[in-house]
Length: 299
Image (tube, rainbow, N blue to C red):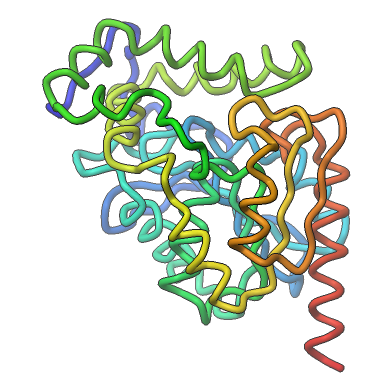
């Protein structure tokens, strides 16, 4: 698909527009990444891999809860999201895995991390696990994409660069806003999420990145990735919102059979974005799981 700038994208992610913004920026091989590393010195590092649309601010509630439990958190905006660069590259798992690996190395994080992936970020996390097994202490997947049987949007829509580009330019903003409306159960949280995401979609190339990702990172038919991840032997925690409208909970049993996680928990009264909607409960589940695995490792 040919790179384009959509209507309403009136900002460019460059040093001038980034002045005064929260967080840090680092140049990696594909572009500049916006990240935040915070928490007590010496704490285990939790690396947070976001979904299809969200910037690093998505993790604020969960990150604060994890830091309160003595952990360090490393969150970043994936390329094309938040205040990270919009890159003229293929937005696929290889790109996002490379971004996480390079960020970890650039920040000189040598100890194995606890990787948390949500939605599309869970697919990236699983691919990262397969390529960097030695870098992980535990793996947490929340509402993972990849198991829905019917492709949504239809696969044929993204088979052609020309058709994808036409839909992206003509209907992209509307489709993005519709997608955001299904993620969160609570209307107030849903409005806050939409405002957070759409603020960053003022930057040139944002809708291009969104649709190029849909074209090159399959969000369905990924049972083999789940199966391979389950065979890696990484201590795995699986979390799912009971009212998830994006990755419905009827996929839970399939995910469990493929991943064989050590623990699995359903988060009550929760939609697709458990880390955003229920940060305290999710943090408690993650911290407790990490502590159990650490105790077993040292025993």
